[in-house]
Amino acid sequence: MTPISQDEAQLIKCILDGRKELFRQLVVRYADRVFRMVVRLIPSHEDAEEIVQDILLAAFQNLSRYDAQQASFNTWLSAITYRTTMKHIRRQQTVCFVETDRAWLESIPDNETDLLLNDTSHERLLQLDHAVEQLKTDDQMLLSLYYYDDYSIRDISYITGRDEGYLRSRLQWIRKRMALTIKTFEKQ
Image 1 (cartoon, rainbow, N blue to C red):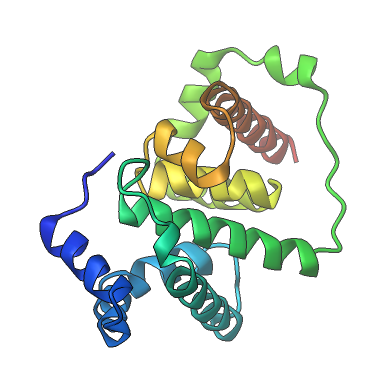
Image 2: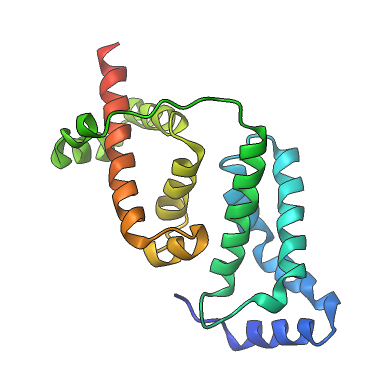
């Protein structure tokens, strides 16, 4: 967990003491990061911008609940981003996902999974993108937080409200699921 900077702590204190116009400084610092996190799962830039506005409003309204002892401000804001984005997606989602048999996925050796997922050839990267699109939205967000945003499992646990052990297991399962999807592409 990255500790909150003195400057940021002072800024938050001033905002909570009534200098609400200073919240704009936090918006300037974090809006782009929040937007990048949202746009990975929301294809429409217009919808993503609207969701970012909702996130920043929620952050402003709940700023008094922020506890620097539990998480960095960035992680706290990412938790709001996660919940707001997932809520939006669940409202819009009409697609039914088919869950793969766990025993079948567990039969894929880790070294085979690593070989498939560590291949950075152009064709493999296209297959990886398509494999990610086949995942449930929650799993896509988990991959995004861990691999793109470099959050620790501890921070992701805070953001998602999920147990760290579950998250480690889920990331392993997702990797195997993606490897299986790639193997299926290769057979076609």
